Each structure stands twice: as C-alpha cells, then as structure tokens.
Length: 174
Image (tube, rainbow, N blue to C red; front, side):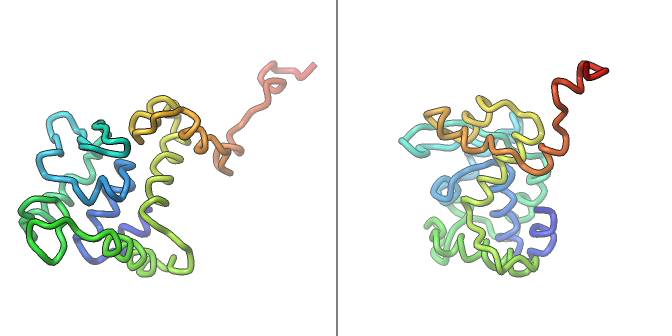
C-alpha cells in the first residue's frame, strides 16, 4: 500500500485510495461521503445509509487528515467530498475504479486486477493480522452477519510464520 500511495501523483486519487484502505468503506459509501461525515475530534468517519441503509462509524486514520486537507484546499468540493466534473454531483464509480487502476499501474502493479473492494479487503485483512478482533472488524465494515466477516480469517503467510504449536509452548515437548 505504501508503494501505491507513494507512486500516485494525483492528489484526488491518492486521497481516494487512502480513504478506501484506511477506513474499509465501500465504493458507494465513498461516492456519497460528505465533509460533515468526517469527525476530526473523534477520529472517525460516519457512513450514512451504507449497505442495508444503515449508518455506522469507522476509524479515521490520522495519516489521511493532511492529505484530505490538501485535497480540500485545492478542489473545494461543494457537496460530496469527491465530486465528478459537475460541482455538487458525486464522482462516478467508473471514474473511481479507473483512478485505482491508474494508481496501481503507476506503482508497477498494473498487471493485477485491483479494485476498490481489494482495498477494503486489504483493510480488513491487515487489521486482522495486526490482532484486531473479528467482531470489531465486522462493525467497521458494516457487516450484518459475522459469517460475512469470517472470510478474512484465512491465514496469510505472515501469520503462519508467527504461529507456535501448543506443544512447543509446553517447553520440553514431552
């Protein structure tokens, strides 16, 4: 992710990617995100009428704030944080997906089929790898069923390398 963000020269695109990866929001949720949904005080982002028309809160990474401030000063969006060609109108989902593909290409990862959902998936997987419990991830992602969140429990290579057998924890192995 650091490689992708570092290689993305377009400020708007970098802000979009940082929000996807840093918050785990869905494409439709990012499209209709407004400045008033961002709470610097609580360091959270309010997702209004997400999937299932439910509101929820997710984390707002401190690292994204300077990026959003720079983006806001440059673009001065009217209604939605990321607007398309017409002021006051939400950016098109195809344009957002195109921005992600372009960023991946700039980072030398253009041969892979990355999408907004890939960034959401990475958010959840990396939180899990860092020790965040599955119920917290469920809430952040806005899943109604824990089974949906359980797909992120697959073992990554990094997690497998850190595993210690219960037998080895006994000390002598006998």
